[in-house]
Amino acid sequence: MKPKCQHIQTIVRVTPSARGCEECLKIGSRWVHLRLCRTCGHVGCCDDSPHRHATHHFKATHHPIIEGYDPPEGWGWCYEDEVFIDLGANVTAQLGPIPRYY
Ligand SMILES: [Zn+2]
Ligand SMILES: [Zn+2]
Ligand SMILES: [Zn+2]
Image (tube, rainbow, N blue to C red; front, side, top):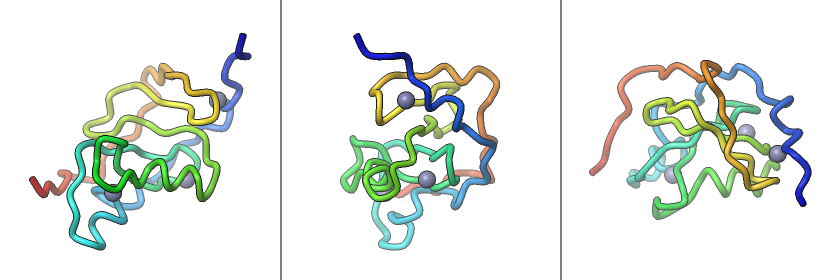
């Protein structure tokens, strides 16, 4: 059996790095859902999106926890343990309306 996720302790209050997926905004691409890194505030896109920037961010940085973020949905995901996390009220407010490309 897998041990319970210990990364929950690493969750911090962050300021989102952008209003949409940082990398997609730069290249003018679109995304399906947004994921917010709860270590540094990086905003990336989910695995249903063409570029999967949230997963790329994890692979590059090993920041374990992301938050469902369009809008904040109250759940997180630990990439290391592959488990969902209940964030309760510990969610991140959006900076403003999320720009959409589709
Ligand atoms: Zn974990
Ligand atoms: Zn993206
Ligand atoms: Zn990060």
